Length: 362
Image 1 (cartoon, rainbow, N blue to C red):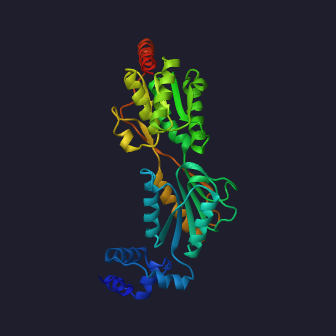
Image 2 (cartoon, rainbow, N blue to C red):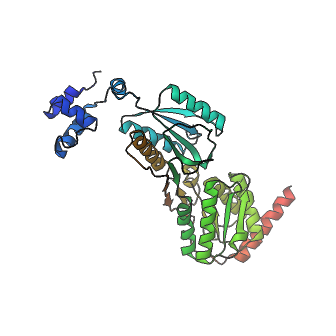
Image 3 (cartoon, one colour):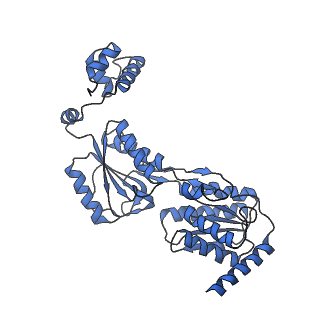
């Protein structure tokens, strides 16, 4: 199949080949009207024109290739949106993306930097599947951007695109507060990841704003953030605090465990206890009944913004790049939140009964 050329685009638009070249290389400032420029770009797109990267690289004395180091991004379903956005954004600017999976340690990342250098990439993106701290080696590439992670050293040195943890989680907490809940518990990871810090602060501030009772005592930390941990934490929470009317979970797997525990305790959602999660893992949040109210992480937006910033740095279009960009997640309201009911007595009796049964089974 023959590829469209500059001459094909020129013929389709009735202008010279040189003008087409200037427009498509971004160097046509004040050489033609905006209407003509738009016409040329549309024709190039319609004809499927793509620049000869080899010729362009030789002329510019650098490749049109970006490197992306992934810390489990490709293997985590919802985080894969970050990779998809990075690829599409790179291609829209006529760059290719060289993808390498790495472990989150300095040696693995340093080896990957060397591999990318052999392929003469002009810039590198490091992305993680969740908002965490990345362990960088002492020597790093000149053009480096981080997505969904922060550096363990020289914080603020590299442009960093991260979720707005505080304001994102606050959306679902406000939903509980506005509904009138006063007895709210939090189930969260015990490891002090950046995500944990932001979401915990949001919970404490929401508690103060809405007058939640004994909020600091109602934070339950888990060694793992899976359904089993959510299940155990919820049983403990309801045993200690049968007056709880809402539970905020650090992520959707924990929330799934909360659903399982409440069902076993014969406590209705949301009639007796409201539940909110975080991440919007659709296999969980959309599959639970009732559907889980949660926050969708902005993985796609982070991938797009990170590559946009990387390209601006590589092309020296940003004299002072933004150090940290926080992107807010989207609140997804389903059916797991309602106004609180006066169910302390029934919660207490059903909790005691279920826990007694468990002890007998053991």
